[in-house]
Length: 69
Ligand SMILES: [Zn+2]
Image: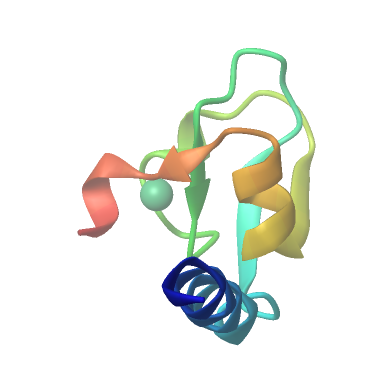
């Protein structure tokens, strides 16, 4: 029962941030997602910049950009 509660709490936490839009570089070498297109991290991107939800970025195993903590 406790486990079910923990899982549902986690799902709730994750779903809160689902709709946050982030920017990612459409490159197989991309490692991060960004909250702004003006970020110096994404300006190095030589591929297309995609706007996706944070959930999609996390599913691609991208991490929050180091410039944006
Ligand atoms: Zn960034």
